[in-house]
Length: 105
Image (cartoon, rainbow, N blue to C red; front, side, top):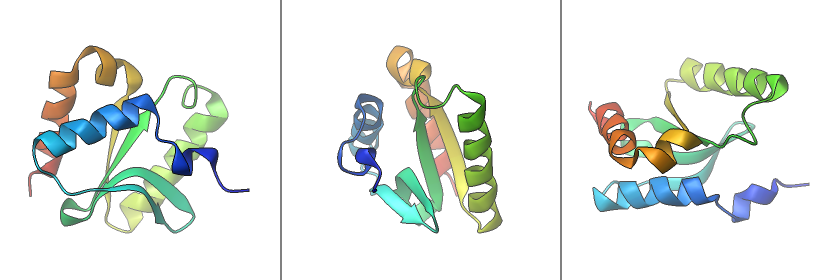
């Protein structure tokens, strides 16, 4: 069964996409690399942005899965930026600043 989220972005993913669009960054939503699906991939910067909602990323097994995913991506040269739901919702300016820092060559 394919992941339900592949066709329905979360509200925090939509927020981050809006931030990227506001600074004219080209991205690919729900991009697959290997066995992993990345919330947002920016090919020009080899940057994966993961929008970590509180529900899906707080349990021990979810944390371990995210670590395996991060390790795989790092091993193939992709930088990972994880943004927690709280920062996306409550501090969008800080969130955008973190993205801009990660985009720098």
